[in-house]
Length: 81
Figure 1 (cartoon, rainbow, N blue to C red):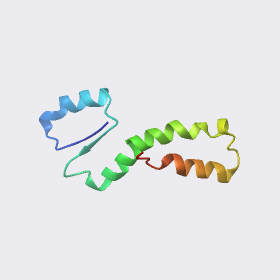
Figure 2 (cartoon, helix red, strand yellow; figure 1 turned 30 degrees about the vertical axis):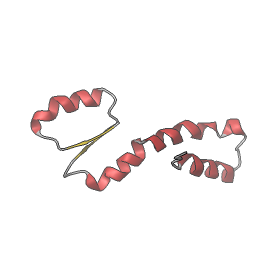
Figure 3 (cartoon, one colour; figure 1 turned 90 degrees about the vertical axis):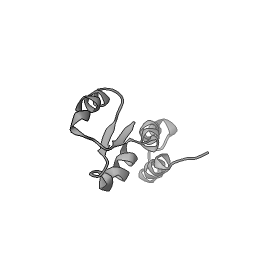
Figure 4 (cartoon, rainbow, N blue to C red; figure 1 turned 90 degrees about the horizontal axis):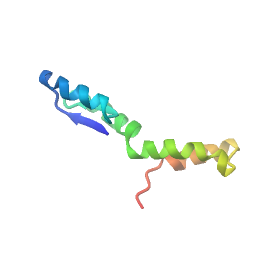
């Protein structure tokens, strides 16, 4: 989960709890907009899918460099159905 919100000093307790739970990243509204797309790319569903699929290449017999690059490209693409 990516938490994107305006943050005030009194929110420190909530943010600490979020960091200990399942929040993968925190982006502060008004500050982190330039890196927000990178955070979503790194922690989003497509990234989890890529991380789950990439190690399967050897089991599928994809040993050639071109095959592995194609598998990396394919597994990183968002699939909407």
